[in-house]
Image (tube, rainbow, N blue to C red; front, side):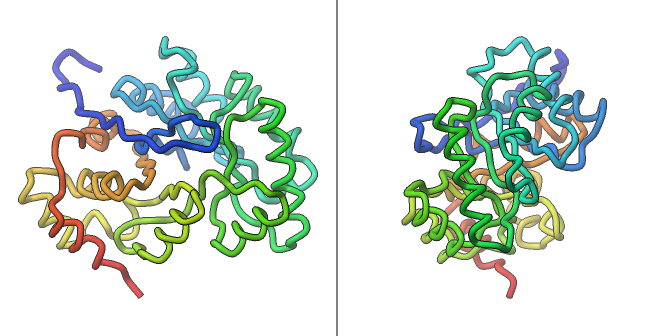
Length: 268
């Protein structure tokens, strides 16, 4: 971070996962960021104070994220790293994980997710069993899923006896559903949202208005909304200034009225 850039007030909020590890609610997303842009953006995020990085096999940037992590000078144990196995890799899970670990340059990841569910319920169960095995041998600390319905979570949990620790789904004030929040909470599954800053949220009049009243950007309002709900959020950007700004949310709070207004933005 340059000498002239103010240090962001980075939140330390975290959720406990089944292993006992604490997953920071604020993470840095890397979807669609490739090559040197991925190295630079991840480096900027770590410099700004993010301690949670989110990548995936299909993103094609695990090596770049790993390079930025190694060059940061931070201890590996101080940064929470998530990657994801494509749903189409049924029967190839361990090879996929080995490739991810080699690319990132680490001997474990903190969280490994199935990126999307396959249609066949037996294959879905087999894939989850492979993640459980990888956890049991210490290649990953915690395991979870992405884009799963509550019914799918219940099915793999029933078949394996192991409930996913995290479900990463598309989430924003436009998608807020208290029944979804409650279903995850009741099962002990941490809800993680992606694409929070897409779909028109940054220009929504309610979000913009709250930001103007508080002297905050719409993105900061949305990130703060996630944190106050206890939801994991992974904003992404390639611009260092915006990366810092998105993390600068620990020094203000939304009122109960603000939260209710944002919750009410759910679209049919």
